[in-house]
Length: 67
Image (cartoon, rainbow, N blue to C red; front, side, top):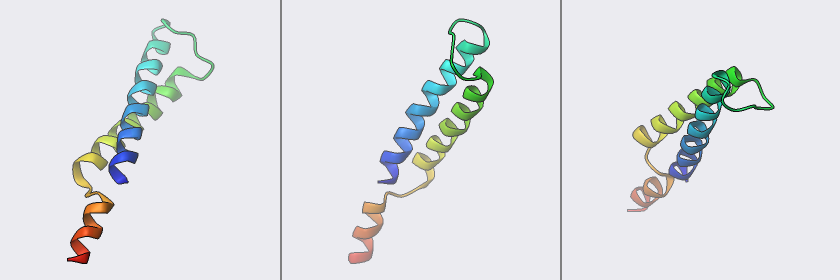
């Protein structure tokens, strides 16, 4: 479950980061502040990467505790 959440955060953060950067340089007109979108995208992207890198999945933890 943690890996699924991490992948969602990673993909969502990457999309928000790209859209925010494009909004800053004026290529895309956004309804939100492009700076806020860039910062949130960066935070979610880094959080998703760190969750994928350092967390064990909850299914793996439950399987090890049952043995």
